[in-house]
Structures are given as structure tokens and as C-alpha cells.
Length: 277
Ligand SMILES: [Zn+2]
Image 1: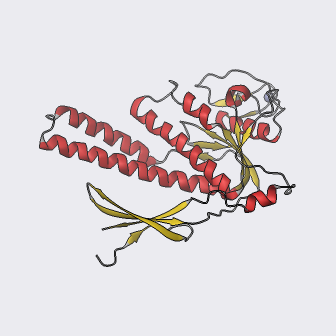
Image 2 (image 1 turned 45 degrees about the vertical axis):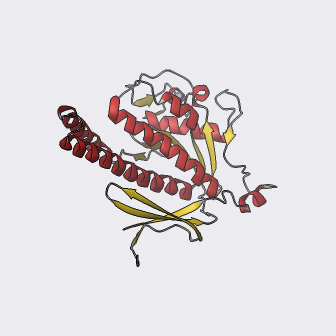
Image 3 (image 1 turned 180 degrees about the vertical axis):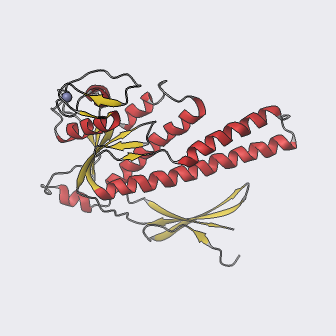
């Protein structure tokens, strides 16, 4: 077959274990799987992260991560193609071509979104040693709720939140970053004042947090701050201090934590390079 060019490179080299050949509608792919022990460096800062629909993420320091534009563009293009498909005669050649175009678009969006999420979560783990965010389970359930955008667009954004939490969880584990999953139904980050902990319901349309104590800031930032505060002191909102953490961690490296960190956390981790022929 001769040499072919590879796209992408593994973050870490390892022993090649497997080559998978796949044929898709637009070419052949060879995926090479390497066995390696992933390492990643954790940062020192602490942060709370609120994941949402309006902004992909809002950090407790006020940083907002906007939805990438390719998602909006793709969802309007997808709607157009779906409409076109519904007008075409089923199983006709035109219909098949449109079907293929839809599949291609889905695949491209999935790749772009994955790439975006990997970069985002890798950046957080590199910067912070403690990250407080919502629990994956809770998010998966509440994300179905009706607020805001509906239908296709909404569904695409939901996949986004789950993808971010999943990637964040395993990257934090690799780096030894402490990830605290805040039980949001108990802690109610969006209804709690990060300064005085007073609780008051907000309407979904209320984008700013304003409290009689004088605290005023964007709603999502306030929620992120409440999660960070709870992670540092689970007793603060009066909810149960039980919490799930992905990594045992003691500040200043208490007993046992050192050997834990040096153990291979995920020996089956694979780095993947893809070539196209
Ligand atoms: Zn307050």
C-alpha cells in the first residue's frame, strides 16, 4: 500500500497495539491505537463552573465561554436539509443524496464539537487544581426540561453539556485535579447568594443575581461561585456534606495521596492517530 499521511498526533507516544480499517462513504480510514500511560499536569487555582445553554460555561471569576458558532450554523443548515428531504421522493436518487449530506453534516458537527470540548476541558484542568461543577447525572436529567430553546438546537446543546462533563471527569482524573460534583438539587446554586447564602427563587428569565446584602452579578457567575463555595465548605449551604469526588486529594499531599497519584490511573487509555487513504 505504501506510506500514507496521518492526520492528528497522539498527545503521548506508546506502543502500537491495533490497526482498524474502516470504510465510510467518503474514503478509507486507518486508526492506529497505542497503549500508553497518560499524564497531564494539574493547575493550582480553584474554580466553579456553571454549564448552560445561554453560554456553554460561566466560570466563578466571570469568564464566559460562548457557544461555538459552527453549532448555530450547522443547526440552521440541518433544518434546511431536513425540509428538502421531506419534499423529495423517498428512496429516489436525490433523496439518497440529501440523506448522505445530512449524515455528513452530523459527523462534521460531532467532530468539531469533540475538538472544542477537548480543548476547553484540557485548558481548565491545566489551570485549576480544584473544579466544582454540576453532577453529570443531575445534568443529564434536567437537561431535558423545557426552558429556552427547543427541538434540534436544544438537543445539540444538551449533547454539549454531557460531553464537557465526561471529558472533564477523565481529564481531571489523569491530572489529579480534584473534581467536585455539586448535588445541585440540594445546593440550588442558581437560587443562592454566593455572598450571604440567602436563598430566593429566580425566574429563568432573570439573568442577573441581586441580593439585599448588596451582592449583584450575572446569574451564571453567581451559580458558579456558590458551587465553588460549597466545594470548599460543604456545610455552608446547610445541605448534607456527602459528596462524590473523582480523585482522593489532600491539600499539601497528605498520606496516601502521593502513591495514588503515581499509579497508572487508566492503563488502557489509548492515543489515536488517524490516516486517510
Ligand atoms: Zn446576599
